[in-house]
Each structure stands twice: as structure tokens, then as C-alpha cells.
Image (cartoon, rainbow, N blue to C red; front, side):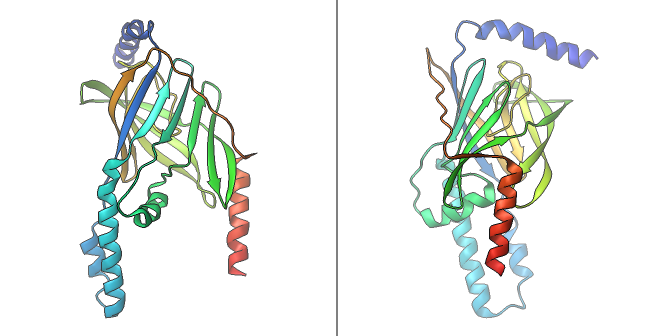
Length: 248
């Protein structure tokens, strides 16, 4: 109980600091923890020489593309009531390798995610067609674990999110570190609903970390739904049907 009282007091105190100007732009960077490729290659010793050379080439390309992730900025524009999140367009040395890496990290630069108090919507392109997908919200469990990230005192929250993976429906656990020092309940991607801005989001091997925040005098959060509105369930059914037709 003492922990939750402390958290509540912190939220009330810092809320006053943001009442005069409630328009902000947060920039996030991505960190990716690579798998142990040497260990993977050791399991392939019995494979042919040609297969091994192809595997080594693919690993070198993947390592090169991971380094280029440092170039990407993820932008979150927000105010008291709503936010919009997107990935900035970036020019890469090896565009082909990056396009191959994006699906593995579940990032893509043609997506726009809009969040308000009631709903989360995402514009995306799938199967050569534009869709507007309504996404379910995360169920959070706030823990008593804390740590300092940069200049912010953060609290750990564990979230369970029903991911729309197009084909498989599964629950996935994520970890968010949020700070009541910035009393806005938004964060990277479709993760929101905590009593403070998410400073770091851990999503498997991928982490999104706050790089900077800027106050702006005014900004319009413009979100236009693109394409056909669809539910996650219908999108999964569509993907399953296309996959089935490929195998027939």
C-alpha cells in the first residue's frame, strides 16, 4: 500500500508541471539483442558446404542490417487526450536486408498508430491492400520494481497483449518501464494505459528506448483512416485463407 501511495503522490505533483503546455514529441530508438549465430552454425556442421556458405552469407547480412537499426527514429506525438506514433522514413545502405529484417522485428515504416482514451487504430498495408485495424488494449500489472533510466525514475509494468499476428492468435507478454514524472499514458507502438509515459519497452529481443522529448507550442495530431476497416480476427482469417491457397 505504501508503494502505491508513493506512486500516486508522484503523479499528482508532476501533473502540475505539464498543465501549461501539453503538446510533446518523443523520439525513441530501437535496440535489438541478436541471437548467438556461432551456436546456430555449430548445429549445421553436418550440412553441405553450399548450405553453410549460404547460411554464413545470410548471417553477415543480418548483422549488417542490425547495425543500421541505429539510424531509425520512432516518433510519438502526444497531448492529454491522444497520440500518434510512426516510424520515420529512413534510407539504408542495404534496403533489401532491412526489408527482410523488419518483419522479424515487427516494425514497418508504412504503419501509423493512433491512440485515444477509447480506441487504438493502426493503418497498415497487407497483401497489397490498405487496412485500418482496431487493436485491443494491453492489460497491465504494475510491480514494485523501480530503476532509473536516463534522468527518469521508472516503474516496471508487465503487460499482456493479444497480438494480431495475421495467422496465429496468441497472448504475448511485454515489459514497460514508465515514469509518473511525465504524466501521459502513452508509449511506443500500441502500448498505452499506464500512469506515465513509457520510457523503455521490452518486446522480446527488441527494446524501444526514449531518446529525447521536445515541448512544442502547438501541434495537430492528424490521423486519417486508410483503406478498409477490419478486425484482427478477420485479418487473421484472410491471411490463413491466402496461406492455404498457396499450398493447394
